[in-house]
Image (cartoon, rainbow, N blue to C red; front, side, top):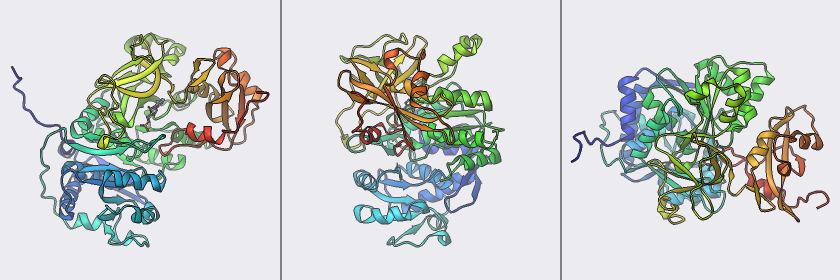
Length: 541
Ligand code: AMP
């Protein structure tokens, strides 16, 4: 017997309709690439999204068409998210930090019909045009009098397109499994692969990520997503904010410590989210200028391991709770978030410290397990580590156009991460499987070693890679960027590991560099680092 509940599809447009009806006067504030700040409300955003949907139809956009964006986090990008998906087309967010050849590959692979781009990317677009013949038209995200000089044939102006339409548009209702947005993985090996989200997966992810033990956003929050809308839909925040009615602050291209500080203070931001490198910049700015953040309560840190020293610094010096989160493009992206359980509240600070350094517990909607090389499930004892597998309704079942074949193993998605899971369900990543250091047949976690190095007061950033060793196959090599004006030597850093890890884990050598390579999504690029240090040999080896 079937239940007698309404079978109403989960639609992305439903999130916006909800925000308009219940949080119509809540603000969305954006810093723009052309300079200045734009303010309006969810009601105004909903109205303009309807106008934009009509503009898209007038341009000839049909259901399933891919509409690309090369854009910062702004109100216009927000409108594109809702208008494109809402009219049953597919919003394809493109990472402008990729190489132009990767971008044209992605645009052509996705068959993008139109591309909406910020003024910052005029030169990039001019370079892309000859390589992207399938794009019918390029739309610049500004007013007509803000369009910079360019050579783009038939360039369309976003504000003109929107202004030409009324808002008399009803969002259509269709199968909730319809594709809604597309995001390519950063593709450290091989070509980038497309992850295709659906209305259902997006709405469920917005529900799941808003739970109190997940990101816990609410109508009393003011949320600033630093994580770009071109990186896994800004971790779903543009959807979760509409669902919860949180005030939304969009930083545009201004992601440095000084700009973030100013926006946090001026807008009363209570929660923000981004990768560790962003928070490193903010911390250095705050400490260098002896500043405090007066309204921020929670910072979500994910995308790479949040170093314990960073979690402590925010907590102890700024009274801010760090929510350490883990996920992937293939997971919409949220998988785990670290929050305490009731029984942990009575623990000492030290005991709690051990828990909060982990990547956290699976939120409802994500199942986790670890397996050995044969696919046998390993125990959740916090000690055994193996390949981390996940499944759930917002996790990919395959890549766009079946690229790479079926990625699943017995219905589970292999994350490519190596992890432990403890009896309380807290998962800890020890490494990307490609980055784990294999020394004499045993595995050493590069993340653990990096976390220790960045706890040294003179270290700004650290990476540990396995460098070739004649006897042990690989040994850990620590690569360090020092804090400006600070000094520390090789021997002191090696001695810093004493008592913190097993002796055979301690790096064999240290190299000091001016900077470390990062990927287009702001993660340490071990691939590039290994490449840079290809010629490195351990002293005496
Ligand atoms: P992406 O799809 O670009 O978001 O990359 C996903 C990968 O980033 C994961 O498979 C992890 O290797 C890494 N990652 C994400 N969050 C964390 C975290 N909190 N700690 C360690 N690694 C992370």
